[in-house]
Amino acid sequence: MQASLAEIFLWAKFQIKIQQYYFAANNYQLPDGQIITIGNERFRCPEALFAPATVGREESGIAEMVYNTIMKCDIDIRKELYANTILSGGTTMFPGIADRMQKEITSLAPSAMKIRVVAPPERKYAVWIGGSILSSLSTFQTMWISKQEYDESGPSIVHRKCF
Image (cartoon, rainbow, N blue to C red; front, top):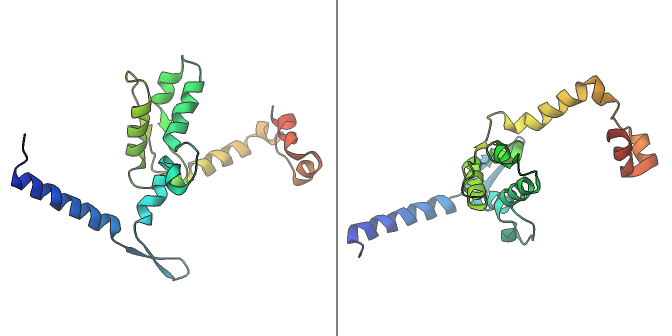
């Protein structure tokens, strides 16, 4: 079926808008007052999370890491893990990251799986909040490692105190 001239025109117009948005530079003021200009780096940096090869790295992207991790788990809990993937940390604050993760994991996971990626609004601080709650538990205090203990024993101290 041949595309009409109107369809071709609209497609071309859409492509131009995408390019203008992609290449448009935005100015940002830093806390010290300095102004920096950021162009398409806004898209290239987060893309490296999904496709590390774009920055010369051979690692798997985050969606593939999630998939591989779930596939290493017991088959009986995989369905629950696919349906309850929660994003946390400052790096997850990029716009659209939850939708992208959902699409990427959906493309990797078995087709019958229901994929749900949750990006809570407080996710930027979720790791800190969880760590502070954990550290306040009296049962966790026996696992604390002082600098002196670490200097004396090295990384193996973790296995003795925590497991």
